[in-house]
Image 1 (spheres, rainbow, N blue to C red):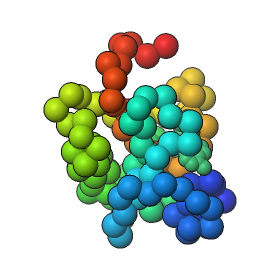
Image 2: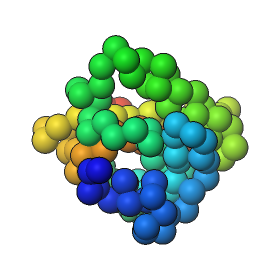
Image 3: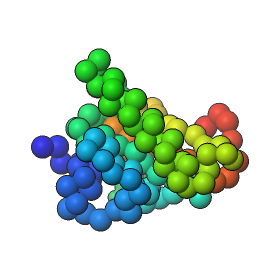
Image 4: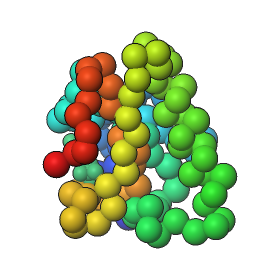
Length: 114
Ligand code: AMP
């Protein structure tokens, strides 16, 4: 079993503010929010990053996006708008090697990111 901080959150070994959970996915608030709403949607399956996903993961990857949509609705930002981000590797600033989709919203977001 991988020893990432997100694996520990999935295993409930460390606390997180969980806003959604099912058999395949978990969503919890980012500990260092970059927007009024900043939630991470992760697969329970250990996939280090999007580059490591395979064709066998396609349904799971789709599930992460529909979970993100559902969480956005629950957070009340579906009409105002939101952004989904996946950081892959060093140049993208990936810091936790367990796949996660950032859900950001609640304010006007600038584009492009720095
Ligand atoms: P990334 O830089 O794309 O790998 O994103 C990792 C994110 O995980 C960052 O936005 C961190 O603030 C967040 N993070 C790290 N540790 C925790 C934690 N224990 N609970 C919630 N979010 C975390």
